[in-house]
Length: 457
Image 1 (tube, rainbow, N blue to C red):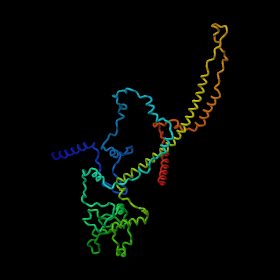
Image 2: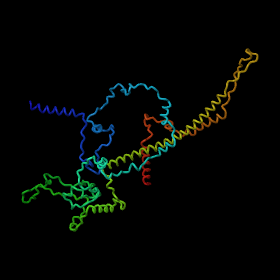
Image 3: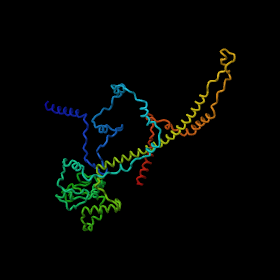
Image 4: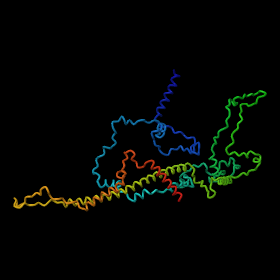
């Protein structure tokens, strides 16, 4: 019984420890390669620089990784709550003074003011398209050295190379024949920056091998190992390997003349110059004007991240430019409608003034007195059914009304789009002014314009 109780106790302890760790965030896996990954050509950077968005198509593991949790509730229990919970501070007292109307009108005036030429100038502006995409050079000194110099020696730098002579990093020095134990730990032997980059670019060929029959215990099917027999071949389980030659294999290298030829052993600076000549000959490098700035560190991790962010910035600038182009079209239409509305309002005011003048001149009819009547002949004598004729509206008023009607029918019919007369609401479906197909075409135009500006500069 005691033997059986001990494993049970250990199982209970493991289950309790697993329950305690259930709410803890999952451990982050350490990547095998911290810098460039398994394949440097693809640069799989495992570093997460921003919080990713969560959408409905993600798996649970991806959501947990983004939330940095082991478990999370699937529902917020909103369907079990009686209405929305209050989200206001009811303890705050009522303000002593209300907001003045002038303050409120001043606040909302920029949202409803008429458009002008300064708005079109703002929409035509595209900003600086050169400076954000200039890669800054790395400083000549390390930041620890700069900090130590600023602190006047108060900062201690842990450098494992104390007392060692510092040499330029991107400078070829020495020859492989000079390699020994004393030189290996120093900077006295170094290949050039161009040769080092070519060596880093070499990748496995992953070429398919020749088809061979499947073997069993090192013996091809159908063959019998006759070890020890008179007529048998002593294979002893060994295979004859026939590796494929590399892709850069030269057949003439296996000839006797090639083997007997004496090739000079070049120093690393000579190898660097020879590589430049060969790359220029095959067209990989320009014939003139090539001077690689290898000290600028344009191919390290920071530079790679900067290039990625610059690419994202360029895409966002193209989107912003396309949206500005779309807004420019709408603002021009709105400005035309504003001019039409201004003239129409002026015509309305003229018609209103003419009507007010007419009604002002229309006074009451003069009362006529009947002679000999009571009260000194002050009794009013009605005009009867005929009455007095009302004054006409006049030729001027007719002209104004005709002008207003002609303005509405002729010019007002141009503005058929309802969005010119009213502001679209975000709650309405498909109310966005940035349609995907229109924005894609505008982005294409912005990119072509950008390329033309770069070529001109």
